[in-house]
Length: 307
Image (cartoon, rainbow, N blue to C red; front, top):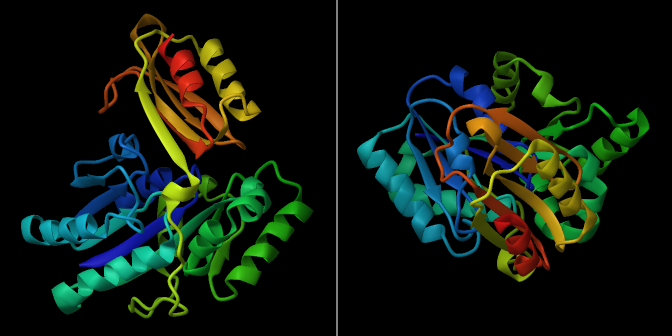
């Protein structure tokens, strides 16, 4: 069983990345989604008919190592996947995810092998996130062997070069794809990532564990909105999220009821947001919305969402 880890800070595009490469993964594949907060959205967005196991209400690196180990062992017993793709919480420490994998291997032996360690970097937010969330953020970059940049299309080339140089300072060895990976065909993306070298070990640089707990820095809340939203109204709300009116919202996503029975799927970070209209009902309750950030104004968010 090969374990691939697709890491990245909140909103960097991990689920989209997984969906792009899934069709090109050979053998049986299983997904582990680790959502920070009590409500999972990303599990509902994974495409294809394959096992998706969700670990919520925390992150693997904090309090859920035991749940993670149980999940891997259960997948091995019930599904015998050839590949397990892990999408850790966006505020997880990559080094601790690797340590959790090492504990699993200690119990299951050589049948567990480490595959690719992938980190997606939101290029426009790199400097800001490094300044504010330094250790959380740099840990994800330091422990990857493949790093891909998101949302580079509108960046000045000189600013993009600064981001790549900053990443190189943190991780001189990793292979870096500096153009927006979203523009790649899935087969090209898979071949590039799969060709990045990896020795198969679970070693983590340095012996000192990062004494970080996401709960000390980040908060989350989720609600199920009972009201119907128009696209313009939702767009205005996402602009409000970026203004700081509800605290420092770093990530929000969800599915609101739209006009004429449609569903409005929204995805927000401080640097990019989008609204997609879809006809099919989501795999989670319609109206579900999740918010992650710092010093969140939960009551204000609830009042705005619940109408």
